[in-house]
Length: 347
Image 1 (spheres, rainbow, N blue to C red):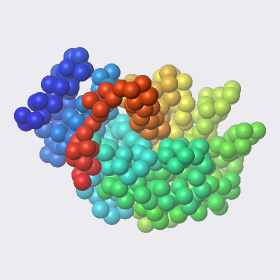
Image 2 (image 1 turned 45 degrees about the vertical axis):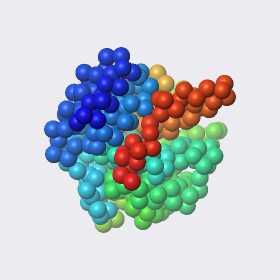
Image 3 (image 1 turned 30 degrees about the vertical axis):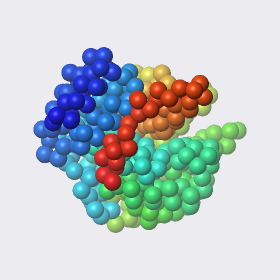
Image 4 (image 1 turned 135 degrees about the vertical axis):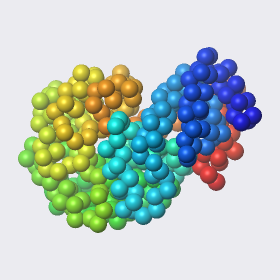
């Protein structure tokens, strides 16, 4: 506790009054039967810019609330156990945050912070190897997913874009291949990747989700299929079309619905109210990202972070590199230490 107190004092100096909030979070963690690694947690908080500490605490508070009602996903060993736990997360009393790592190290850090499940990001996975979003082949994306699955004992869902093909048969095969690499869920979107025709026609979009559902239901464990409607990522979006697509995907058997790019909480509330199954909200777009509490009040059940953590990490890299270019190295004093990272990664 002495080391914890010292670190808290450092955080207090940097966060200009966040100490009370930080202490309340730590106290809540310490009351849990299986608390997070508090030393590693404080180290992670200390490395954040002071204006980012409340944001991380907001996410951690969601994790704490989920831990009470869900229990340990981290102890799950088999794919079926992970799948059961992942499905259970969607049935809790409020939303849970599913962060998006981009490599083994980030996956282990997020697990060390106490998150209950992980999801890949197609853009972060591609950017991490110097490519644009959707620049990985199916085999490359599944190889990446296998690395994330193997990094921790947590359930992992994958962003599999449009399923790597237009036809329902190709999408179904992608679901089967996803299960083979250890995934317990994935997202399939209705975006074509063709700028001239950005969305699949309504019926084909539904047929693709129907095929994905049938492939998922044939697996020996409850694979969580998330269907995405991308209307709001393109010009002249229509809320009624987005809702119609999501309702059709729900009727086809999708377990979770997802519409990235919703512009405000009123629209989020309208979408959630039109659905009976869990809705995933994507945080990561400037001026279109909201707090856990606000999203919970709107009816959201799952919150993903897309590329936002990857971009936050790259922001830190850019800030440090630009400082180096001026002949200064102040970033070293603000950075997390290697032992703190090792603690979080349990290595």
